[in-house]
Image (cartoon, rainbow, N blue to C red; front, side):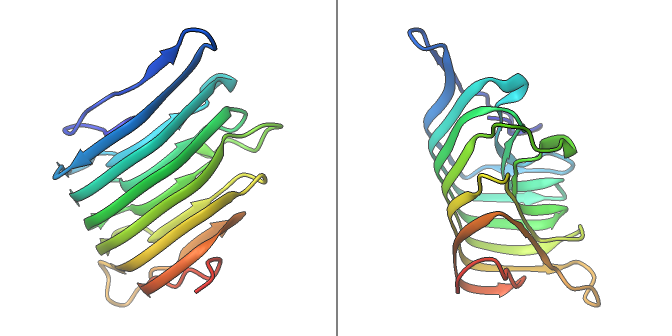
Length: 188
């Protein structure tokens, strides 16, 4: 897990019998990040085609100020493994370029023959402002991201004249009480 500076924590382990690398049962609470950090990213997973995983990750009651990202899951194309049971809840975003993001084309890499499976990710109670073009980016590989949930989201642009759209690719899930931005790919 990459939290970016000045909030930095790396947690992973390797299963000796299977050579799998990953993180489980990670709880992050009451962290403030910024400015110019990468927020709290689950990943980057699957670099170099590796099998990696992240599961049972909870990020709660955190604030991001002037960061590039806030709540993010990122995987490399061509990787193997999974990211599941990830919750970002009670998050404040202040002037964040990518407030909510799932990026399965990390570093703008094209799709490959394999991809990590991203599922059961919840973004809940996230409020604040976006300094970038899209407040929500759910950019999943062709295998798709399943059971993605957005609850109680209200992210507006720092420019009151500019809308805060969402980008959706290959994602299935639900949205509840999304005030801004509109997320058309989620059943509401």
